[in-house]
Length: 145
Image (cartoon, rainbow, N blue to C red; front, side, top):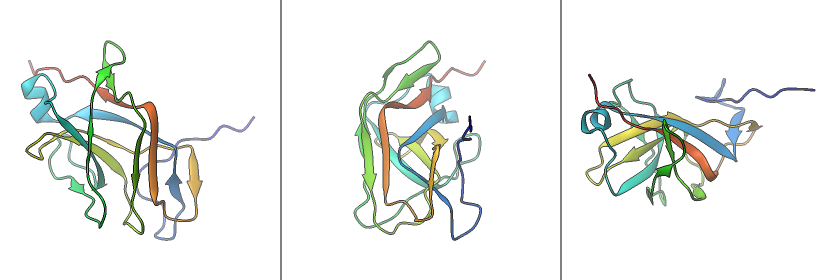
């Protein structure tokens, strides 16, 4: 039986291959969320073309016509994770390489981030980023000691 390894990050070449839907992700809280010990409400999910450093600083969000962040809710998944309990989909025609996701508060401060993961690849740049319900996991923030 062949086992497929999930791919993530930038494609190995500018010509692909790229990850394709369906996607999943596991997001880590940023330093801002860890200091607060909780996530803000409301939260907005956005696509990233550059991931931040480990503190959650320096990410670059997709800027593309027709792209907007989506408001999301978090629900408990386990003792260590929350999840987005609904289907999420972004459709962006001809956008640059998207490699991650971020949760933003109302002031556009990133509170969590993670890389896109997928078991599917394609030789065409994706135009749809689709996540089934409960396929975006968000690690619960813990206050620093």
